[in-house]
Image (cartoon, rainbow, N blue to C red; front, side, top):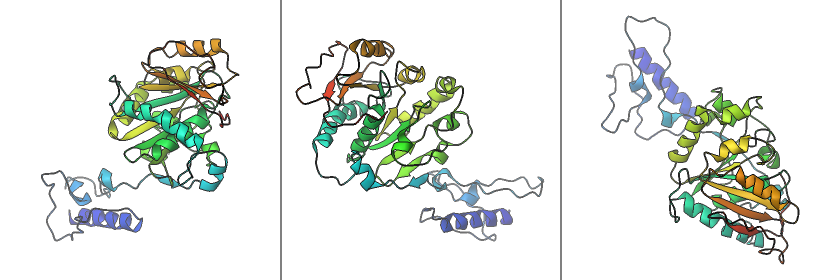
Amino acid sequence: MGSLIEQAAQRLEQLRQAGVSLPDDTVMRSSAEPTPQIDAQGTAIAAAAVSVDPAASNEPVPAVVPEQFHPASKIVELDIDALSAQGFLMPNLARSQLADQYRVIKRPLIKNAMSKGAVSLNHANLIMVTSALAGEGKSFTALNLALSIAAEMDNTVMLVDADVARPSVLRMLGLPHGPGLLDVLENAVDMSEVLMRTNVDKLTLLPSGTPHARATELLASDAMSQLLDDMAKRYPDRIIIFDSPPLLLTTESRVLASHMGQIVVVVQAEKTLQSAVQQALLTIESCPLKMMLLNQASDNATGSYGYGYGYGYGYGYGYGNETAKG
C-alpha cells in the first residue's frame, strides 16, 4: 500500500511541475502514514482514491487523479489586432456602431438564456446561428455575437463550430484545424481535450472536428442529445453559440435546431429571396423562439425590407457595416 501512496504523491508532484493548480490542503504523505480518508465533503487527495487487492497482480496501478486536478483545456492565442482590423469585436476596442448593434441583439438572447424572458424555454442557453443559404454572413455573425457576449460581466460563452461540412470558425480566427465535436461524438476524445480556451476572457471554442461521412447521423444520435443536455446544464452562466450550416443546403442544421432553445436566422439584405427565407423557417418549426437578423442593410433599408412573417417571438435587426463570411 505504501508504494501506491508514493506513486500518488509522485503523480501530484508531476502535476505541480506541469503547472496544474492543486488545492492548498493537498498534503504529500509518506508511506509510513495511514491511508487518507475522504472527508464529509467528499474531498480527498489522489492517494485516497487508490484501491488495491493485496492478492492482485504486482503490475503498477496508476494513481487516480480527481477531476478537479485534470489539466485545463488547451489555450490558444488570438491575434487581437488582426481580428479587430477584420471587423471582429475584440476586447478593448473603442465604442462603435457595430458594437452597439450587437448590444441590442444580444440583450434579449441573454435574457432568455438566463430564464428571465417572457416564456420558459428548454435549453434556452443553446443558441443556433444559421441562414437560408451560404454567404449571408452567419459565421461572421456567430463569432461577433460570441465576442459581444464574452464582454458581459455575468456570463461566459462557448462558440461551437457546428458547420461540420464547411467549418470556418478556426479559419477566421487564424487557428489550425484539429479534433472537436465530431470526435467527441465518436468517443474518440474527451470534451476537455478538444476545447480551446482563448486569450479573450470568457470565450471558449469547440471546433467541428475531423470530417465524417456520417456527420448527420452523429448529430442526430443519442450521444449528441446527451452532450447538448450536459452542455446546457453544466454551467448556469454559460451561453453556447452554434455556428450552424445553412438550412436549405444541408440536413445537419435541421437536426441541431430540434435541440436549440433559440435560433437566429441571418438574412442578407437585398439579396436573399423572401421565398428562400420562408422555406428555411419552415424547416425549424420545432424551435419555439426564432429571430431574424438582417445583415448588410443600409440605414434607409432597415425596417423597410419587407420580411414580415408573423412568427412568434420574431425580431428584426439591421446591419450596415458587416461583410458576409460564411
